[in-house]
Length: 218
Image (cartoon, rainbow, N blue to C red; front, side):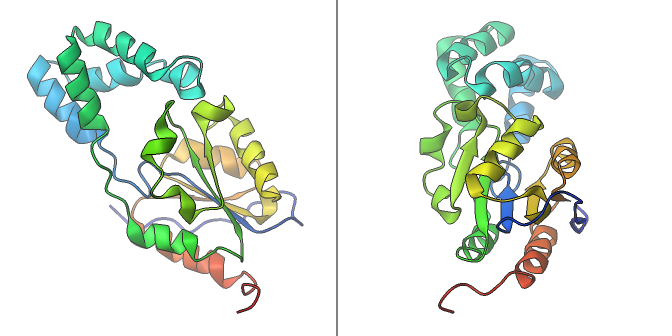
């Protein structure tokens, strides 16, 4: 992939704490979906798009915002794909395989502590928080769509996070791998960066950090 684009400063209200809002899946953790979709498309004789649609179509108005439990949603997926219980369990395991975290990005977020407010903002299904427990401490807060009732790119998840951090839009940087989600953040006045690779995002975070005051006591 090419180098990530530099964040463009937003025009929103300023005067709060500097803040970083960062996505998790596809940014600091590798996306398991492409490999899982390829495996199950070959097994079931359907396209990879068919697999993705079966697993995720409609999830943004149901399980992703906590209106349906994980087991309930997987019953929907099972029916869509015509799988038995063992096959569904295998598919779930493929999508929830032990995550591969980008330690350099996690370290960069953790290094901002005391200089900027930080939050992970993730579209996540119920019960995701325990699976993320090893990395969530890198940020001050973790906002999960299934817990707050709205998902990116809904503006409410951004404003909720900013209020939680005590930050104004014009003082915040938002990082995500989905252009639509970044566009929604920019529309609120935040600076935005579309993640395409670790090096590009690290460069953006370094530029962001360079403008921050030193941590108290440093």
